[in-house]
Length: 538
Image (cartoon, rainbow, N blue to C red; front, side, top):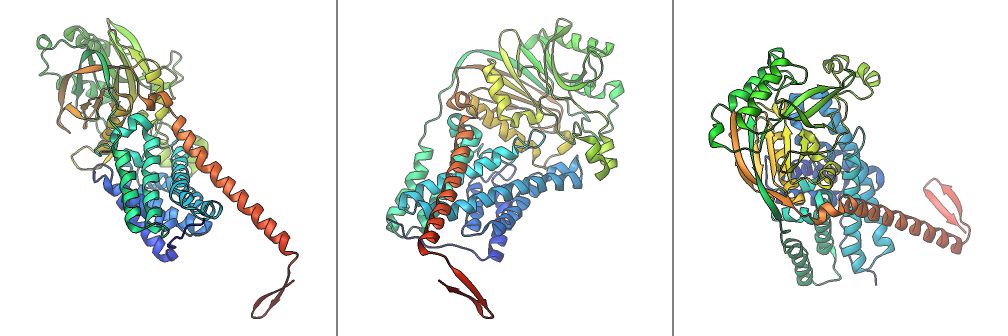
């Protein structure tokens, strides 16, 4: 039986206002705002603005919502890339947002028409809408040039009661669940077939069911004592550090002055991405420094270093493990930042902004090495900066036996003083979610800020003061076993995305066939157009 629904279709002008407001509300749910319930409110505003729209107006509403979100959410990019690339990146993400909005508004029109019952409205429709939202996040996170997975709604939940679900569903799966819950609540509010008290109870059950899932148990086998060093040197692209004389290396060494070798039995020392501007394989003084650290503390040194291939033709943003006078392990960043660490299709893009493109004189090549390194008594999964956002890289390191995750980053380009941008906090939130997802401790080591140790439950257990040189020494548990999210890998994301798109297409085909059958049954129609309108004559 078709359900009775209170129709909700905002005038276009009001829908655009709601969309404009939705972006800041969504952003406020992420760090540094960290009011996580606002993410759900922002999702709801977007969905309400899309109900009852046609494709063209839905695209416009989605574009406004996407711009109002991303222009605020990644404002930190202006410090490094400038206004034009920031606006271009936000614009591209907004176009994806707009495309996803069109699919969602079609779902609101087509799915209830084909499945008009209460279950179709209150269950199937929200699942399809959430699947299409997840599909949009998937496409934006993988294309073009490796995609930009920043801003997925699940990444706002690192401090919320929903964070534990990421161990079961992964980040994209949690995004799906969040949107589905909001969509269900909207449909329940509009369904007049069911009594108001029943709808309230159903909504409460949906929320309680999501929160009632127990935290995934963690298992460990041994510990490792790891030192993380934050040099707070001039590590930004436009900073005045003299890299020819090893200023960054010096800042890391000076930050270790208070670390007594005799008082600390270390298993690993970690310097951040860009921690050393001296490659010990090519620089004699760099070799001396790395050897001195390694021998003085009796522990291997894992440091960010710019490396080159033997023929000198390719350059990598690398993390090398130095022990006994040589490199015993290396990871090369898989996702250099487009237009930051390399220029894709340089000949095509250079005419648009030659001065900006020419600033990036050296292109880093994407690496191909394993994401995990054998440190000796344990295996560490290595992530360099924005690699932490890539779901597949996390899956890879877990498949390769990572017992702890070491995330090295250089945030200096996105703020060199407290409160300057949200980038540090946003990236730290992602690291927290990865800890829960993998049931592994994460040692997050930065050049300037957010150097922290996060346990397998997503809680910060150690750290240094931001924007000051410092060292932290932490004994972390070495994780074993796995989580449902790691076992499923990207299957959940692909499944819900495919289901949403397939159901939408099926609904569209069904409606089309039904309309064609109805037109055939009614016979041919002759249309006579007069001055006052169209008159149909059979």
